[in-house]
Image (cartoon, rainbow, N blue to C red; front, side):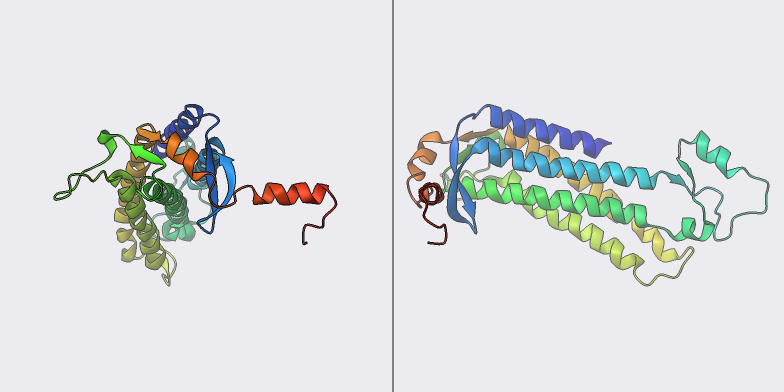
Length: 258
């Protein structure tokens, strides 16, 4: 639930950034080569769509996670007269897990959760990469405020977009947490094995890290300025209207291939 809330906050930050820069045309890239002109809003809302899918994965994951293992014991349940359906309902679960051996050994709900976090981390890393590039002198499309950038120990002119570099770097941890648990579960026989005590740390680390990444990304989005003049000067280079010209010729009867 905390992660979902942080996702919404990042979406709001991106939409706010888009609304504050309505009508701003930027070069669009494919293969990191200039391709076509696009509205900045179009690009920013692409990330909003990605995060919406990320949120959907968490909602799906929560639905599959919400089954109660109580009463499964270590392997085969118990001969004591307990009511698994009563305890499941009292604790707000959808239902008890149907098979006690599966209930003890299942970690799919954790794997799915860490997978959802890893995909989110990849999306945030891509956002970070784009903004780090755009903040460089070579692009010069954005300037981060002093509150979300750092200087250098020896170079006083530097203004580094460190928060998004850290977001990009932290994605490795979240992906690593998923790989840790996948490797942990690989080859385990059914029912409980002591190996499974190692499932806790990757979960805690993944949650803490993804929450930090989302919070930093949302803050950074509200603290950058788009350099309209620099962007405007960059637009004529790279034949960005070539596709529009080709479409015009098609309307005039020239085959697109030609």
